[in-house]
Amino acid sequence: MSESKLVDSLNRLSVNNGSTVASGRQQLLRLAVSNQMHANNNSSTSADALRERQERHYSLSSDGNNNSSKPLRNFHLGMFEIGKPLGKGKFGRVYLAKEKKTGYVVALKTLHKEELVHSKVERQVRREIEIQSNLRHKNILRLFGHFHDEKRIFLILEFAGRGELYKHLRRQQRFSEELSAKYIFQMAQALAYLHKKHVIHRDIKPENILLGIDGEIKLSDFGWSVHAPSNRRTTLCGTLDYLPPEMVEGKEHGAKVDLWSLGVLTYEFLVGAPPFEDISGHSATYRRIAKVDLKFPSFISAEAKDLISRLLQHSPEKRLSLDQVMRHPWILKHKNNWDRPGVDPQ
Image 1: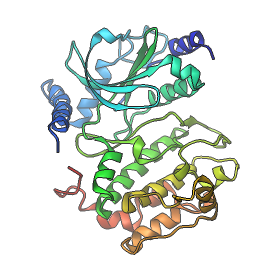
Image 2: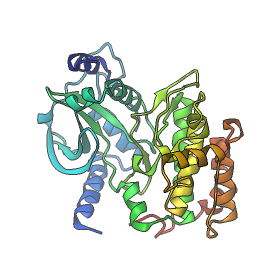
Image 3: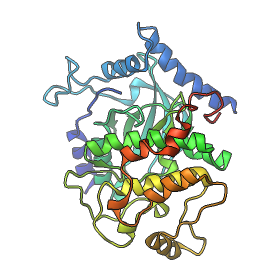
């Protein structure tokens, strides 16, 4: 796809909207809090009201309805005051940004068109925008809108005040079972929402998860996601350590690949490394995944082992459902303690 066709594709996209300890880090937290205060000063105090304000602010049509036949709001870079970089990806950076008119803080993701075309991922980016802009869940990062100039594409994203989950995990080396159970429950809620909408994420890993101001999970990075009502796909995609056996063996796959990845994620939260990682190389990792060569350290509880083992089943049909995950004894054991001070990473 040429760059001109990429621009045409982006122009055709509808920007949908719906429901929604270093000093530098502390400044980011204060900015996230300021978003909530911004909403509070406009006669609301709840998280639901905050999301409603986001919807009104980024509404696409004059009556606020999601009606693609009406004129879209024209976003442009001049509407934003650009702040510090929040992160760097393969095709660009993510910046802290504030809309000048309202003072509302967002994350602005920049993608360089030339690099997208060179890497032949134009369709992937378009699919990411189409899917993420239609998602409305408290544990999924919101995409409010997009725009582009001659060289770049800009995605207007929800600002996650506590940053990347991966960095918290690397700093702590591994999470407690209490915190891990909280995160896995929230991930299961997010995935249940996605699967109900026939969306498969296909790239679940700590690097693709952010934390909101209250320490809640924000699933992000939908570049490998797909809307698949037929529930059968063949593309090999995602991250090696998180690939399920059906992908490794070149078979068709469906939404249950996300269940496998949830099991790998649970293991990595508790141990600090994915279960099938092998220093011998990729081929050894592939073999361990295909055989489900699963080994647990002695400090993992019996309940956690049971959940992980029942998710990491070679046969997709034998994996626990998301509803079963949310009702699993390991989750229920810790659920009453999640609001206790000191559970979330600082």
